[in-house]
Amino acid sequence: MGFTLKNLLQHIILLQLATVPVCMLLGAQAAPIRITLDTLKTCTQGLVAQTNITTSCCPAPDINLDVPVVDFIPKRDRINGHRVRKALQCLSGEELETYTQKLTKAYDIMRALPAGDPRSLLQQQRIHCAYGSGAFIQDDLSAADNYTIDVHSNWLFLPWHRMFVYFHERILQKLLDDPTFALHFWNFDNSLDGTKSNGVEGKGEGCFKPGHFFPDIYNNNSTSTFEPVRSPRTLIPNITVDLTIVAGVPQANIPVRFANDSAPGNRKAMHDAMQSGTIPRDFFGVPFKYGDARLFPLAGAGSLEFQPHNSWHRWIGGLTRFPSTATADPIFNPAHANIERLWDVWMKMGDNRKLQPTDPDWLDVEFLFWDENQVLRRIKIRDILSISDLGYSFEKVYDESWMDFVA
Ligand code: C2O
Image (cartoon, rainbow, N blue to C red; front, side, top):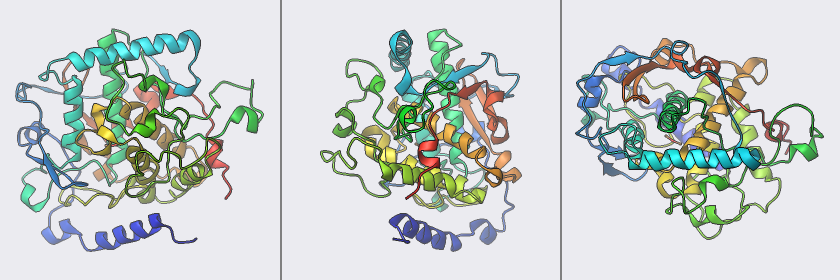
């Protein structure tokens, strides 16, 4: 079948895009999106695009917005040395035990912080909600005309989510008083046992086991990394995540799309998402600049965002289903750590794959995040393009599982 549902949706989306060159209509000068203290102060009701339901997620009233903003400078701010984010499925023994203890302790603390503390899980939820539901209005433009901001369905997606996980990780470190703590990732994209299929066992460092099951460490209902409202399918042991979902949500009690095996559908989805990026727009998503109206859901999403990212959100369900609540479920972070790992992998794949946008209207986009000391930091996309400058790397995993996929 040459024309999949995904193709169809993307074609519809491109047609829609052709009809909305809004900044041209306005005659407004395109410029990078900028989030400032004023943006925070003029934050308004958001609208969850997927449901059309309004939501309130502006910074809690007891958070002081009359504060200095401190520029983020990646190398200078790399205070914590270098850390390696590992694949969750390969942790074992003492390392697993220590990691589980630390992670659950950090979320115990984060859940207990008062709402006025921007590091609280509640505020971590609200920040993603505000950035993802149109609650922030573009400078001097009007929310009524849809000149709001969304970090989904456009080229802001990958960098914004890398920043979110980065600051979230720094907050966890601070709450644990452990600057070496790294947020390990959910390697949902690997469905093969590389130690068997590639004979790499014992050769070199890395994790070559399949990682496509819901991570156990987030699935213990007596700890703070658990969320009871997830789809019941996440509770069934050894059920493969479904990365082929592009619309709707599979019925909660029909969890098995694939038998517990090499999940060729997932590997194909990964292969397609990672190969489609010969032009930056396909991989990163469409440009979104000052003067552009917010798009409806899915329009303009890059290949990694569209699928697998949206797919696992739908598969997990519960709080992760909508931007208004997604970051209240701790699973969001290891899953997004893997998304940004895949961005990094893509950058290194083949000679013509390194076409990151070079447009200053992308590089100079400015966002605000609270750091681990509750200081508001101004950070630009150009600041986060090198993860080694940010002070971390990812354990090597078996990306060949989808890179080498042949239908
Ligand atoms: Cu802002 Cu996985 O979403």
